Image (cartoon, rainbow, N blue to C red; front, side):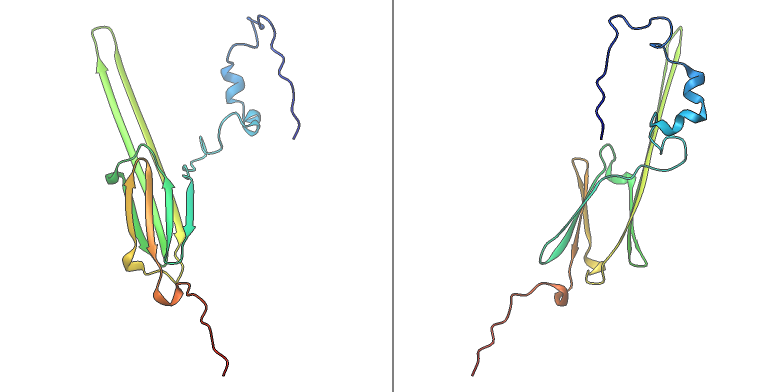
Amino acid sequence: MTLVKFRRRPFGSLVTQDFFDMDDFLDNRRWGRNMLPTNFWNGKRMEPALNIRETDDNFEIELAAPGFGKKDFNVTIDDGCLNISAEKSSKAEEKEENYTRREFSYNSFERSLKIPESVKEEEIKAKYKDGILSFKLTKKEEAKKRPPKVIEIA
């Protein structure tokens, strides 16, 4: 990685470079220079961060999804996969004598995880609290780690 010192001009170039140029922004040659995240225009959805922890008795999954409510999630198990999706939209409108202001937002994501065969699918539990969607996947008895058995020598 190369670090480059940022040199700020004392007053900037007030006529040219300190102003936003829409034509330059929309020029396709600029898109590869990290001006916008890759998922902004090309139809990809956000993919939230995920933590997976394995204990002796279960798997614990935490998915960061702030700003959603419990009703916004759709969680299914299909063909050995845990499918998690969420969708939320909102609209607001304010009308005054001289103006009308409208705002809207839309957020969605999808995430699929392959469930190990050692998990009891019927005992998967989920909860949502403080922006974290948590799952507890209980392992089958035969998959749980057992302490070593000491064999006495006769």
